[in-house]
Image (cartoon, rainbow, N blue to C red; front, top):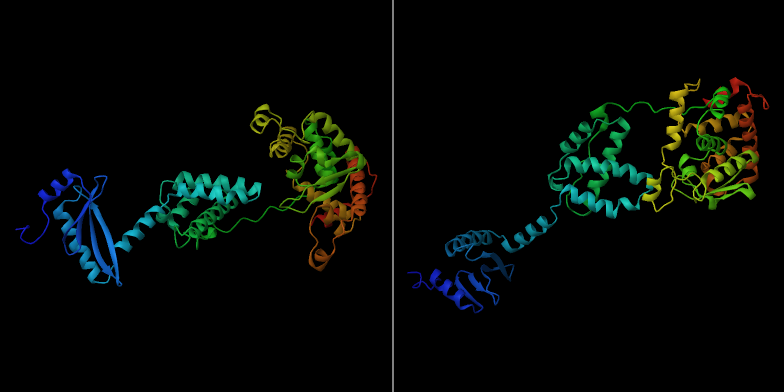
Length: 416
């Protein structure tokens, strides 16, 4: 009966396959059996849409039998009669499937294209949280991720408020990258409020100003010499700890009593005038550094070997040295961080009579307002005088004397 209707039969199809010659045979209403020169047999549906000829691949034979091909063709023809375009729909589905990335694939792409362009410290922070995201959500597709998944991630991580906030920021950046690639249309992190999950943010820790008595104990602390020298230099110059532990001897000009700080994300390039006592501390560090190109070289062979044989000390070394001294010696000194040494210098400088704008420049802070826009003068001589006065004050504190009289009430007022 099939032959009377001019339709194909399984017997014909098997014969054509045995012969192996390429051909295309119509079954009626656009359904066509095709056989390629390589012997691949399959089905296509030919139809018109929008005044143009279209073709839809239905599948291979014998995976899809003659009867099944006819059934699929009937369904697709019904879609076409209702205005559909099955070939275009299939193409879109393939495109979506090609972009149906897992979160693990998205993280990999974000690391390669976005993370590498960020500041080193940001790369470390984001990298830490990307691992958390990958460990918990990596196997899911990006399209599957909902706000509830991000909330569950934050709650399960059990981090501090600040670290939880950084985790949320990292997730937002990651899925913003996904939106840019059109993997998803909306960012699942939008609308998530950390205060609703963890309560209001705890008050920020106020910066500490060490008193003269605390400075006396700190400057006479019994600790490894390179740690003591590092802390003394941080106190005397008020640089950020990263600017010290990453510094190289090529930037320290002891004969000129000048230390060059290269430009970074925290501030522009700057030349710091060094008081004589600070030059002496640098000379001691130079002897301790040996052949290293770094002012504070790595203290373990493993760390140096992993970084080409020479690198700077671990970023937490100074902070850990301070913590170890506070925990073991238990001096009458409040717990502080390396960054508190900057606020200590700023507060005492004001009490020593150093103008506010000069003390701000000693900290490499940008002046505010119109003055900050138009004043390009580095005030090297003024800073040299201020840092010299500050170094004398530190020497006096270490000795326990009162070379520069300073009222305690005035210091406390400056600290507040």
